[in-house]
Image 1 (tube, rainbow, N blue to C red):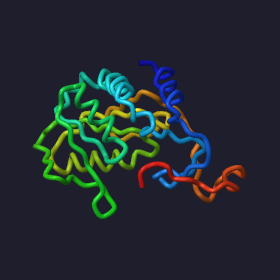
Image 2: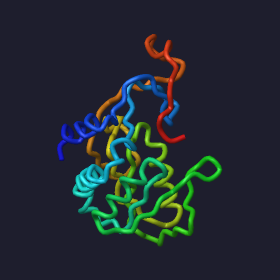
Image 3: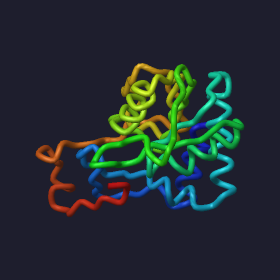
Image 4: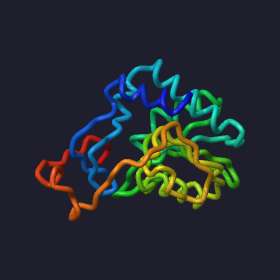
Length: 188
């Protein structure tokens, strides 16, 4: 799947939003990729999951780990496409944690799968959790890299869409955004 084909899926499903958005990172943006909208139809999930799985197949991962909420649907589909175990990390006391009895074995080869990366904060938390449990992170796969490849978390990165989306500090908003209330459509 080409980047243009993946982008078209986001356009066709209405998952590429324009407006004034407050991102999880605290930054503000004019564009928002609402992956949940794109991933509500299983044929689309299967198509995007297959494309991402094709990019990471050679890594030799044995487990896919996804940060909740955003990475759950695509992470599970990538794991299904690759025939791997799937687990997730979720919030506990405001930060991600390994819960629900999930375990990571020493040297277990984990692939982190996320929906969208802007600064990589959630992906870094997931990487740290895998490593603190003795696992080996073999890569990070995502649907959308909003950083245009500038986020480096020390593992190989794979994405379907890579672009630079303008993002602004709260105190440095351009006039068109400063005069419009921000909405936060993603995970909290």
